[in-house]
Image (cartoon, rainbow, N blue to C red; front, side, top):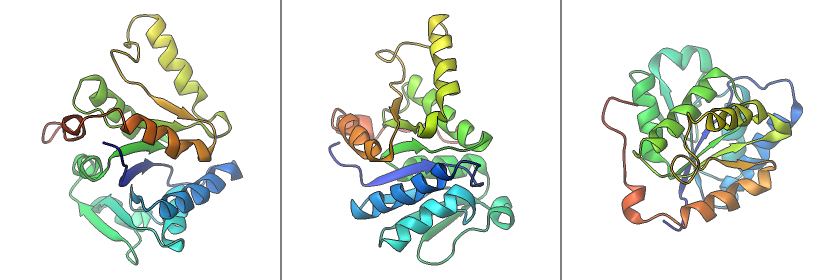
Length: 201
């Protein structure tokens, strides 16, 4: 695979306390639109999710929002200028996002963002896919997670990247797309079509 056409981005349904988080979401949305990369995200119009999607749309980009029906009242999905997919539950949501994306990025977020990121990492470690996974470590947001993963590796509980997951890290928004593209260039077509088992994600 030498081109990323659609990118799944996990991020918070709240804006967070650091203005840099929203600034990053806006800047990354512009980057996606300018590079003709479709955003696949959680579908909400609030928090960092809404900021990111709004930026993509404002700059002429394409957006696919995926949201489970029970969250539509809370996260108020965008219904204009984007494709909206409403799923039955969280498992179907995550599988749909996986199937629509060529790679994954985690911006700052809460437990939902963490859970989605770790599930992708787990399936990659188990050999179910090799799509690139990156954390946007804005102002060191993901440092505690990176330290935990390093701790697990030092105790022999998480494989080294050569045998497990090569989690990409970008400290600045401008680094995200180049790192993903470099990782994607190493994948074969067969590796890009691997999928998780039905009903397991």
